Image (cartoon, rainbow, N blue to C red):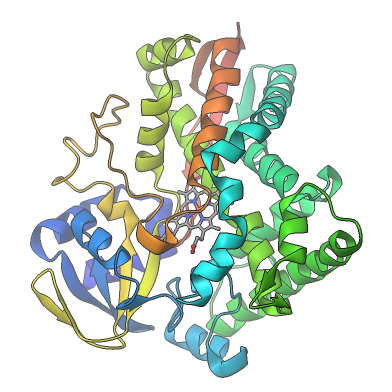
Length: 423
Ligand code: HEM
């Protein structure tokens, strides 16, 4: 892989202003779709840019594991420090579903999977609609301009997931702050100490405090739900048994953290992305404002367009031939969803925002055994927000320059200034 492409895919700043990155990824798809990226600070890894290769690797968890190496890009020093700081030197500061392989993965996933299926989600639809309506009321009361990403989109999915999890509203600001510190750890505007990151030690030390805060919080929640069970996911997790035993502390904290964190920055990013495209295109806005217009195509396209989870890593358990290359046992691979979702072989005119795509095969939720547990919830939240917000607006336009988070992992808009007129 050419040095500049290798350097771009590991650089948080490149994801903050991603047009040039898109050009580099398009070049890779055409010329070196599965090639080794080498950088001074990272172990070499295979950069996987084509949709078909991302699918093939994701559907083969036997040979491409999550548990062996970091599941998110980590530099060499960071991985060494994380290994030194974790039980069995596994390097996972958090052990959640994402870091597990068979047989643990399925045992743990099944504990909550039914909660997130469309049938069960119908039960929470009215509650979600109430949260969406309150969010829209607040936005409209505040007047004709807002930073939609910061003041609206960041709060709505957080309130939904906290409600489902069982975290009371007064603790939400703390959860939002901790999540932003976790996912935005490389962004000086979002990380815990609001500083430029200059070393792996500094990043890991900061993350340790963030994780410790999460753990303290969820330890108290567990104790409460073991004595006062309720109809929420915290009760399911706190009282779950795996192999006849209560879940060990590390996996318990990991479970809460993945549910609490995976579902809000991501869904806010795709919600804000949908609003940005509507604000730029009055005809599209008119069309979807109509209460009778089906929103499914808009939502699927906004998810493809924004691709909030920008990558996950896998590690080869054995030698594998794929895409004409031989991956060796122990090799590390970056599934670059940003690239997969602009793959010309799958999406006609991939750089056009088109809610009318026939069969949108976006891969933003991943694929296979680890496919996003919350995908139906994410779609439902976005649909309800569009249904509640758009008919109440007469006009919608951009009021300034949007800005993206500088992060290699979870990205999206951190600022979206809009001007609107209530209907
Ligand atoms: C896993 C994306 C919303 C919970 C994942 C994965 C991706 C992803 C790419 C990894 C898939 C793979 O490795 O193949 C997204 C996006 C979202 C979103 C783009 C919003 C637009 C949510 C929500 C929840 C959630 C609302 C709520 C609970 C999870 C969990 C996993 C996961 C628990 C781990 C599943 C496993 O390893 O078995 N998500 N997600 N996500 N997501 Fe989401």
